[in-house]
Image (tube, rainbow, N blue to C red; front, side, top):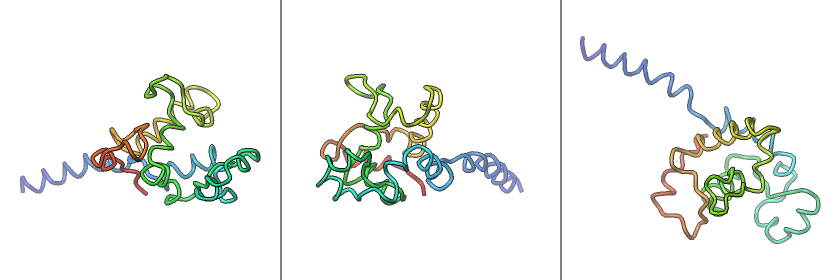
Length: 149
């Protein structure tokens, strides 16, 4: 009986934590749609096409396509490891202290940008936020990435 009560209590205490977990579907997709889809939506080129024609797409205000969970993961884990983190970072993690070139798109005010940045960081995972590129990141660092669907 005591074991059952203990199990029940641990499940009851864990439920709020699970309910608060940041996920792509619940949290990131709506945020992405509001802040990023104009340049990185379904009419944007895939990474390969963008890379081959950067100047063309930059001239028309388009970045690489990131409108699905799978496409977005390209810029978190592989093949463009850390790209999202480098571009959305507020500069506190950068050697030069400068924010990433997309930080300003996270909100109209500093408070909104910090709130949305915190949501991205929580989604990617505790201690997983990195500005490193694919050739500099370790296997252990990659394993920290959560990015729940």
